[in-house]
Length: 457
Image 1 (tube, helix red, strand yellow):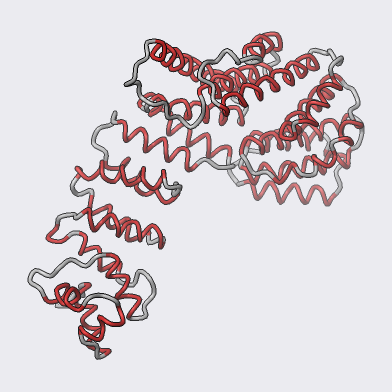
Image 2 (cartoon, rainbow, N blue to C red; image 1 turned 120 degrees about the vertical axis):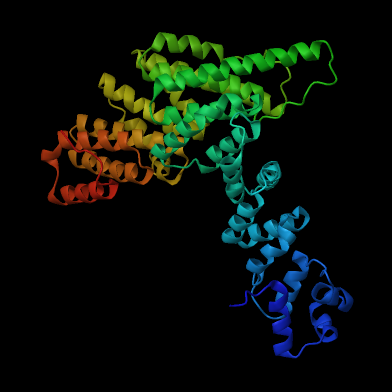
């Protein structure tokens, strides 16, 4: 029968082969001779700490983590998990990226389901320490082993994974939203605020306006309820009121909920209804308890309301504030991309020339492709669509087709099937103006997007 080496037998073999005594190895490892002896010779032997294991590894000239596979048994002496050894070991595994060791420890640890709460607390520590991605296997462990489907820690674990895994892939973000949504109402309210804001942004990026409005209204209702409760508590001077701990100031959620509702109504061409909502976030200085961040948000929302009021006027055919809108964009660089996108939409809808405006912002337009934020990428995709339509409207077919090809490539990168389909349809409409080289480029982009996409025109 083959003997399975243990961490102690492996260390003893190394010492013997190299001719070390406890005394001589103590000098090169920095571990006290007596301590080292009790780790190997006592009955029962003294537990080996992670730090001691790392010192032994370094003294023997092996790479970090050499004994980690064997150390797992040290964490479960006599079959029972010892968290005082497991926690520092997991922290080192996280530092070294030893995912296989982490999974083995978690698998053995959760044989006793009372440890699920401990794993959750460990995941939260990692998350709070800025190690969001490293916390993923621990949240997944909680989700897999939580016995109570309505538990708060299960909902928080689902929420953490939802937030961590969001990226630039629009379709994947939608899948993540669908998987997470059943757990929304089980979250603490502070987490619900952040979750609803994220969900509304995701639906908005995919132009699902009804879902965006639904999440925005729910966000607004929740924000108002929390705000009114806290104001009431402050008025009666309750010292035991729980601290408010969401990611952002309450006024941010309030303003963003209204902002996204108005934007969704605008995109559905319900301009008068949108204007009513815009007026509601134009001046939120009445909001109580504003700190410096909150006050800045109020000023930012005031600027958005002014800009979006100009936009709605333009969309309804009133160009009297066009120059004011352009000046406002120049003063707020982050708003230039959505602003020029809006101007292109207006120009395409009302057939007027904005060449001078595009030239005025040409330096900024060249930078649009550098940002990889999902919402920004959505604006950039739609900017290219509207720019191509504008170029076709003014008979600049070569430029229009090149813009569409750029957008097809971009839709492939972010996996946005809606933008991809719109771009393909627009290409087909003007395909007679395409060169053979442009056709070949289209074929390559189609193949890259995936075989499952249905090209039917």
